[in-house]
Length: 103
Image 1 (cartoon, rainbow, N blue to C red):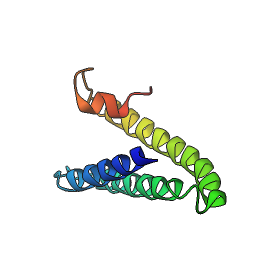
Image 2: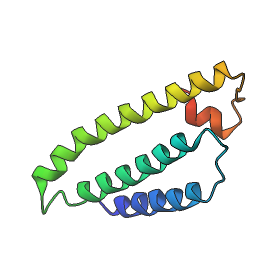
Image 3: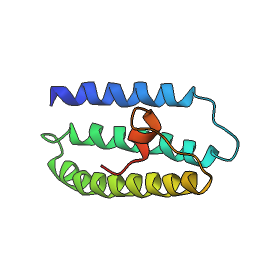
């Protein structure tokens, strides 16, 4: 459970760093959804951390996190398709490739 504190801190740091990135016009919704996914994930991990004090909530949040992960995957897939249609691609060395490629 101690590792969860590091995960929570990393999610918050990622949120703050992502929030500071300038977003090109037309991609604001993508950026806002990414920030919301980071917040939701952080909150889910915070709830999971309470497994001993509230085991029911921790069990429920596991399913919610699986659903959230699927929602994030679909979101990235939609953006990858949109970018490909616009002629924008990423090489395997780029962060966008890792973010938007199905793994």
